Image (cartoon, rainbow, N blue to C red):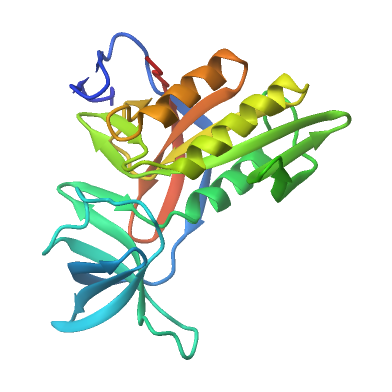
Length: 257
C-alpha cells in the first residue's frame, strides 16, 4: 500500500511521488507483556497517570517525559501492563494509546531496546555490528550507544517519536534542552574524527516522512540541521504496533528543511 498523502502546515509539505518509504528486508519485533484495556483519565504528573481499569480508578506509570497532549486525552482507550514488582506505587505501566484508527506505543524506553536488537541483526551502513555499548559518556553527555569497529567509533542517539501530523512524524513535542545538547555532542564527535547518527523511532505506523518540529523547539531543529550538514547521519524508522508486539517495519524519508 502506498504511503498516505501528507500535507503539513508545520514543516512544509510532502507528496507521495517525491519519495517512497523503504520496507526493510529484516524486521525486528519486540513482544509486549499481556496487556489489559483501560481508559485514560488524567496525567497526574510527568510519570504518573490516573486510568480506569474495569471501571475502577488506578494509578499507572507513564514511561515518557513527552507531553503527548494529542494522545493522552480524557476518555482515550489505552492498553496497560500490570506491574509485577511488589511494593510499586503504580499498579500498571501505560504502554499503548488508541488514537483514532492508529495504535501508538508510548514507552520511551522501548526504542533503545528495539534499535539495539535491530542494528545487531542487520548491521550498520553495510557492515556487521560486533561491539555495541550502551550509555557511554561523550563530553558532558551520556549517549545511547557507541558502536566500535576497529579504530572507527560511531556514536548514536535514539529518539522516541509519538507525534504525527498529516502523515509527518515530528520530534520533539516539547522543548528538549537535553536532546539539543546530545545532537551538538554528536556534531562535535564528527568534527573530532568519529562518526555519529541520530535515529528517530516512530512508534506508530501512519508516518510517511519525518521532520524536526520547528514550532515546538526551533533550537533542536537548528541543531539537527547543522548536525546533518556536518556529517551526522539522520535516519527515521516507522513501527507496526499491535497489542502483542512492536516491530521496526520500514525506513521513512527525513526532511530537515
